[in-house]
Length: 277
Image (cartoon, rainbow, N blue to C red):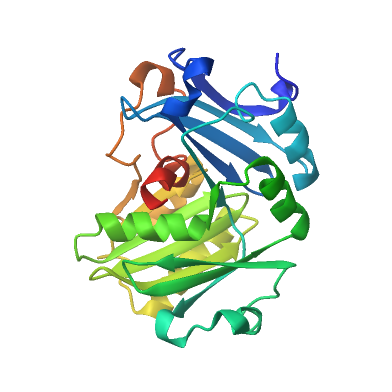
C-alpha cells in the first residue's frame, strides 16, 4: 500500500499499465493547496488508464507523496503540471514585457516569490501567474523536464479550441474557489476567480459577473465543471435555466466501467493538459 493511501480522494486503475512500458505514457499532474492529482495516458491507445487524487494539508506534503508513489518517479514520454487556483493576470501580448511581469501582476494581485507566464496562441494573450519558491523548487527537483502551466491557461486554451463562435460561460469549482470564464466569438471576454463560503456566495458572484458583462441569465449557456455539489447546481438552476454539467474532452478514450465512480464534469483540466502542452 502506498504511503498516504488513507488520504486518497479518487482512484481508478484499469490494470493495463505496465511499469516497464512507462515511456509509452504521458503523466499529467494537478496541484492545488488542498490536493495533488495525477493520471496516466497511454499514448499508443489514447486511453486514460489510471488516476489518483490525494488530499493534502499543505504543499509540504507533496514530496512525501511523490517519494512513496508507485508511479510518479518513473520515466514517462512526457510530463505536464497544472497549478490550480494560482493567482493570474491576462495581458495582451503587444503590451507584455517579461522584465515588467511582476509590476504588471501586482496591479491586480500580490505576487508570490516566483512569476511565470504562459502564451495563449489562440487568443494572442499572455497569462501571468505566481507560485511559492518552495513549490517551484519541488517541481524542478522531481520533474525537471515537465511543462508547467497555470490551470487557468489549460482551461482557456481548451475552451477556445472547442468554442463554436457562440457565447459560452463556464465555471470551474475547486477548493471553494470559482474560476469563471466567458468566451464569445472565440475570444476571451472575461476570466476571474472568486472565493466563496456558501452556495449563496457562488450564486451572487455568478449573477454579479453576468450583470457586469451585460449577460442575460435567461439566454446564456452555463457549463459547470469540477467539484459541483447537487445543491449548488439546483440553486443556480433556479436563476439560470440553460445550465448543464460539463464533460470530459472528446479526444480520448476513458474506460467506462472504471470511471463510473468519477463524474464526467470532474478533472476536465487534468485530462486536457496533454492537448495544451
